[in-house]
Length: 240
Image (cartoon, rainbow, N blue to C red; front, top):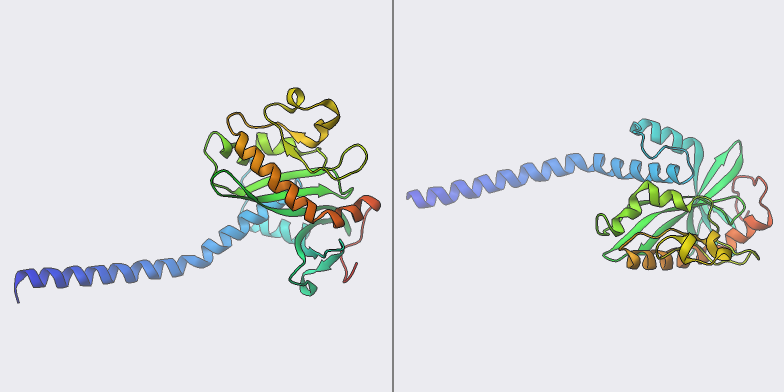
């Protein structure tokens, strides 16, 4: 057997061995990767209602325990009724409830919006009045670092807290991202519905504003129910 053939055989065996090792490592790490993804989303859900501090590190076990104690995964139907996860239909919308002392303190809507370079995914929480924003988080995006990528920063996200998705007459208008400072670019009567924009990232703000409006409008029947009864609601039951 020539030296060239032996070299080719050795290279083929080495490639096969490396492939098997990489495949084994990938399979072995898959469960850990999936858990890390789940923990990150749980942390963002908790952050949207102020149950975790954005700049503090938490152990995975802390996040899981706090999530289990405070957040309920449910669904909302087209009439705005809250449906338990085990009874939902394909047309129902996913929803999360922040429950404390057997009361719904806030509800959390998953956000999946167009961005400038890809999808923007996160959560927007509304207080039990169905109008006031309790928090906003982003866990996945492809926006430009230092520009549109600032949507993941705490300074931007905390601007949503206290803003409203209804106007002074109680009509749905969503929440929008201003071009620049809302205090100088938006007339005073509408500032409760705007957050400060990001310098140099007007398109990211435009697309995210549109995505928020589209998503929140789908949940509007349920939000109306909370507006009509903003007092402490009971945790969900079938058809409730």
